[in-house]
Length: 470
Image 1 (cartoon, rainbow, N blue to C red):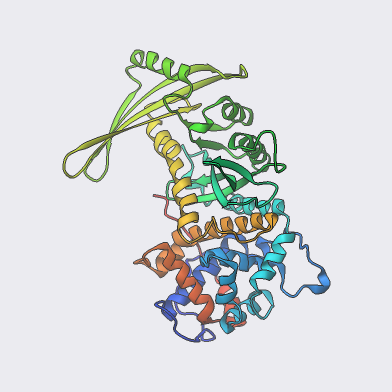
Image 2 (cartoon, helix red, strand yellow):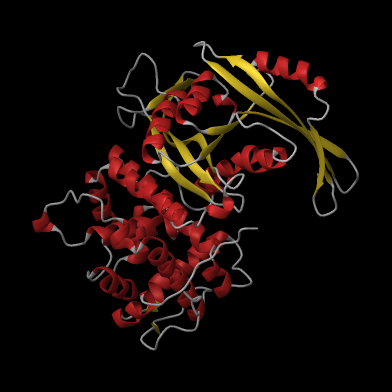
């Protein structure tokens, strides 16, 4: 297939009004990037959500399921921040109505409360299947092949983050924490994100950390959720070669045994107080293997010096007396500032790879240290980059989970748009911050007039989308 031409849309696409800084040409380009990305990667919104069971009474359905799910994604993709803003910006708008008519056969966008009512009835497990299916589709299409660790393993980070917090009990599943005599009620989720060196952080699977009842003897926690999540991950992707990258919380028998059981590789942060016997044996054996050493210099002016050392075949028995054979990688990284001061940072990981001079740099850089991308490109972007992860989109607990999945789907689509060749060709100089992409997309939905004929012509175009694999 030949690359798509980003010439102006057909004559049926007419400007309705000029709002904000985004020009009509920019609106045409960003709308084409959005629609082409969804269509090319997943077959469009109707196919994307076709596996969901519609909980509504067929006699009272006005808006198709795909149309409402598209609204749920646009809520986060355009970074509107609340259901009320969804109603304010997209409802009762002629340009939006034309697009929904052409795409879904319904004249207009539903009210935010209508979307919430649907989310209340949808099954979170089915929505999880939709979300996991997106990454599975990209894997089948070999989109992510260039980013595999050692040319084989998909790097998956598992970590938890807080989503909601309340001063009063929100639901029976709330976790609780008491500080200075005040009880905080909150919700957290354990996320398995597929990470790549070029910056992708796709939600592969989610496990909500929740109490089964208001006052349990022991609260749910990340380690308990990890057991559930890892079992579900193996069942959903039984043959996928996975390398887990984990923080120090998982430097324990629970995580090591799960990886051993499921045949996964891992790189886990090792802190000085974790696994003291392993750390002591590493220190004792390191002087006996002087060849297990590599020095590299990185940066534009070689201003970053990295000193790697490693020890293989360290025996470890966990608290359940399960035997494990580990390797320890140590990295001392020294950076020199412009004024000449040097600052050294210490990193250490345990792994079940056999470490050699040929792979230690790749394992540390693209397996161990890539874990921060889940926090930065993942949680931090979703909390502080306009996706409003910590906003209460619904008081209904089940609906809140559905909105969480809409957010993850929107974030995945946004990354594909931002890093795809269609966007780079349309905006060779970029658009500034990522929020400007969301702004231009919102303006395109609100102001760009697109006929059904022009839309079908766009969807019928043949093109390729490529991503930077450097």
